[in-house]
Image (tube, rainbow, N blue to C red):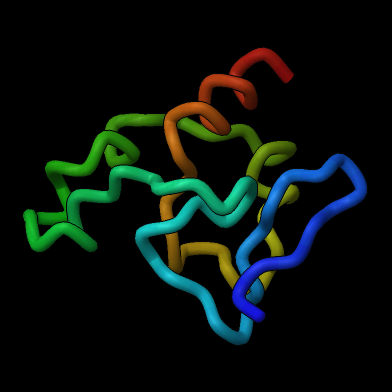
Length: 79
């Protein structure tokens, strides 16, 4: 089982079986440049800033292991 359903019905990656190309918050594709074989510095998230509140929502074991997707990042900017 790679994902579980949270109380709000969004899929979240299972920390024991995660895919770095998947958003650690919602389980959708994150558009990460590094997982697509491009230089990490070309990833959209390298130019983004995330609040501590947003980062704290990512399970500790998945932090710094996978990018958020743009949708979750946009949603976080309104938090």
